Image (cartoon, rainbow, N blue to C red; front, side, top):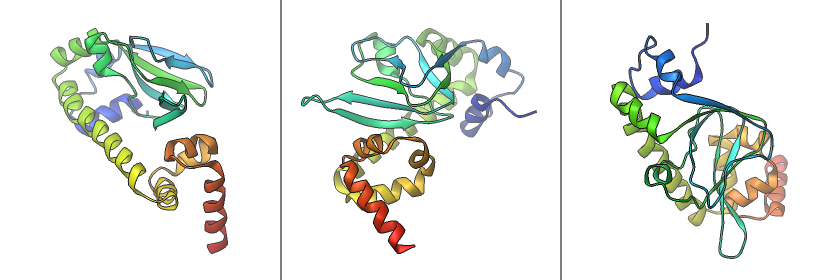
Length: 194
């Protein structure tokens, strides 16, 4: 029998026990989102931190000019929560929207705290994974400001090829901070080189 995706993710960063996992899993609430539904929106205090079992989501905010700016795409086995907002009970400035039908496990801050006290390997996972994910987002944001459109697209193709297939091109363009037409030109150049 295949391991649960959350257990697999936990065991990437810790020695989380398979015997403890069923009890740990009880701390999560299952959610099903249809394509284009929001898990949370700007101005809300998020109640749950989502772990994505199936589907793809986009996390974005609306800038001063009223344009959407995508921070990241979250696919299977990603946490996409607003832990700081949950912990401090402050409103998020972000939106988390399903780009496909999604299956999600959500955990409250109270259950995160409980899990850290009663499942030491979860604390280890949290202490490693949360800074890793945060650093990855910062590094990607730095690249988006400094690299050429072509190198950004080629890096995305190399590092996350599934996004090219499952995310609409206009969202990829928003994420990379370039125009949709630019992506079309890059694709033509790539195809001509093959």
